[in-house]
Length: 384
Ligand code: PMV
Image (cartoon, rainbow, N blue to C red; front, side, top):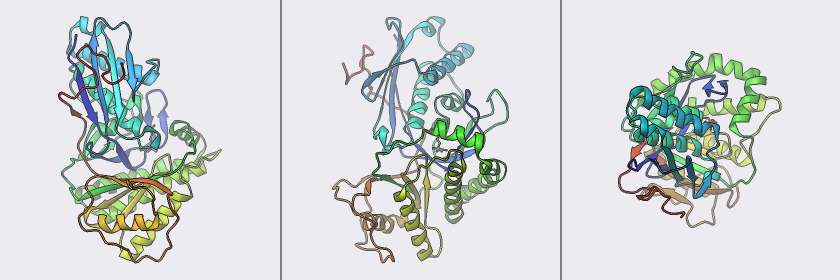
């Protein structure tokens, strides 16, 4: 049997959003996107894989329950890694005939709508790449699982190039800067208390691509210019430019969603209160100190520099009072926190936010030694 390989992989949060596909099957995007990779010590997916001659069929456990392998995206990822292994002759022909067992967990709630599929597929593909000893870029294989997963294959800030080829061979992720480049960068994820089911990003993107005129303007004009500008801002550590582009791009993605027919809505009233709070705060400061961005759900992701974390955290707590005694999790809290921020708005109401996750930019997927989710017989440790 093979050894057991375990990998942990990060979540990423886009600052230039991927919204719309040019090829549904190969998951090729209509535009470039850029994201920050988040620290795996705070949030990560973890996946163990093994291959054995005595496993009668491919098996997968996700967050504790056995799930069907009959999922086209999953099969595509495994198939692509195996054909790469065959062409690189990285393992024996016999090894390639064995079935695999996969066990994967997220250390954060999947239901929170926090880019769990990106971390999950990046983790799966990196673990399989290690198992089959393939070398080279695997972002285009992670992309087959979930588009945004290709950006979780690298740390720091990452650009997913849309590419132009119809076979997708140039639709890959590249690192813009590594995790050490901008060490002061921090992220606060404001998890909105919300139980509403939202239109999936897959469906929402399809409707936008088919119906939104604003989307055409976005793809042709806004994103190409913003991608160059934000990558420059990241390289130069120019927070003001970075923040302004991040907010404008999120706003535009959600405007495209509204411009779609029928329209979808991901941001809620609470999301809009967060944007108002951030704009008021930035106006008070005289320049953008915090940038918000929203994915296909109501949660806000705030990018800010470490020096502003104490005041902004205090502001969030002041404006969104919580009865939870575990309201802020993640990195250790700043030692000195102000007790109050002079702010021209009344608190919005208690328990509108479920919790806040405090994190930072981090590295790409890492191999984990001696902490596997599968035992030596290749069985899921915690569920049998
Ligand atoms: O990779 P998907 O299909 O989950 O799409 C993600 C799309 C957004 O999160 C809304 C934007 C992005 O670039 O991550």
